Length: 195
Picture 1 (tube, rainbow, N blue to C red):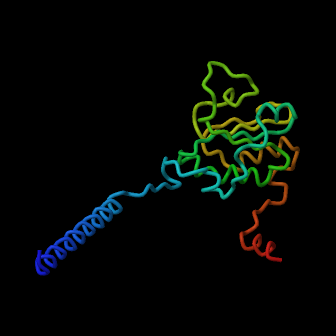
Picture 2: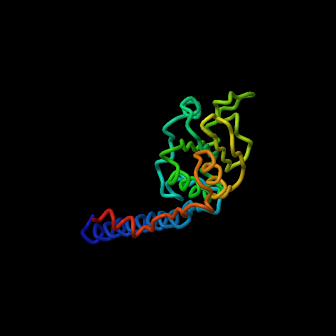
């Protein structure tokens, strides 16, 4: 094999390598462009993580500190909220549940329950969440200190309705007769942290 033939053969091998490399790059680009990323949002029924973290900015709600049975045994007022992380109605409602915790979290037990975690049984005890679950989400149940249900509603129950029941449980003035509770703006909160 002379030097001209060797040079020709070497160029063909190099051209072949470049062609294979370009083909692989094109294939990778087509795969990347062809694969659609999973998008989820507050208005769809797609799972995109813990809804309290994603849509309410509150990761402290789950897991709950106490079970329903423990809270009933301690005679504490309870706010029970049934939800699904992949339900648009629940995603939109996450901020209301977080708001209930904001105002009543120190005095009452706030217990969010994913309905996926309720064991499937024919009957439940009154100390089990399945006893109160009506089959839809979101659903809220408010208990007084005696363990009596004072509110049990399905759907996006307004904060004000929950607040009214909890005001009765804690023997507080009605909202119309008390100072309006206001949430601090983010800037007020962050400026206090900076001091």
